[in-house]
Length: 281
Image (cartoon, rainbow, N blue to C red; front, side, top):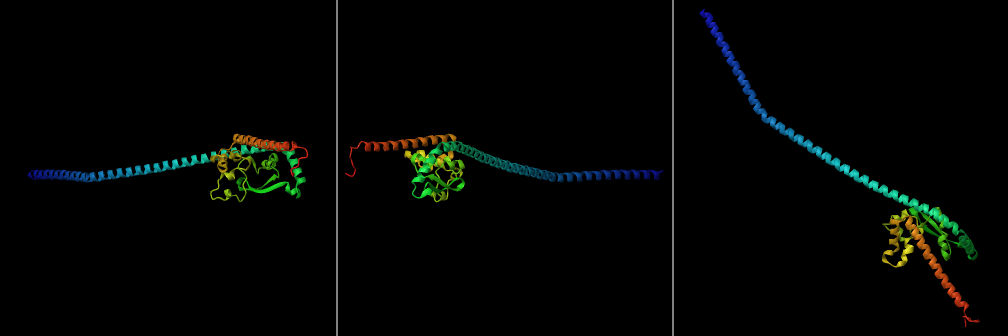
């Protein structure tokens, strides 16, 4: 009996000791976990801060990428606008040149038909009077046309009624000249060999008459031929061409009438001389 009680007591003590040891082990394990938790907390905080920094870095990189993309889009927009303006300007110039060429063909052909009888008569008279045969009827000169292309300017050797200008109408119809434009320059003209030659000289056909021809006689400093030609190249159009043609016709008609009156006055003085009058006496 006593032996059984001792065994039970020992068993109870062993169980109690085991339980106590187990609780102690669990307590120590809990303590270890708490210590590890406390040690891991700063590491976790540091890891969180690192993650935040990485996230901020990625956000900054995204903003920089977006900024570069915005700059690229702005540059592309500027390029598109510049190209649009350039294309629009080229289209406007092409349309203006097309209208100008249509005016040259229509009006130039009509003027050529009207002037053909007078031109044929003048050519015949010059051929009869020319001392060197038919070669002296036309004056041939080298000139530079649109695009820097050289051509031969042919004119009747007379300035009576401006037939020399009218004799160039076939070249207007053919495309070497225009009715209105800057004057045709010689190949050795300094204006063509200058380092900074005006580009419009290659974009326009030279003309029979021009703004410089109808305005240069005013004597104003802003009416210098070079400035007038540049102004015409920038603002030329059908309306301006027609106005220059009308003004040019008026000037030439007024000049011819003035010369005719002078000739008539000289003839009248001669007719009213006394009979038998001799200039030698």
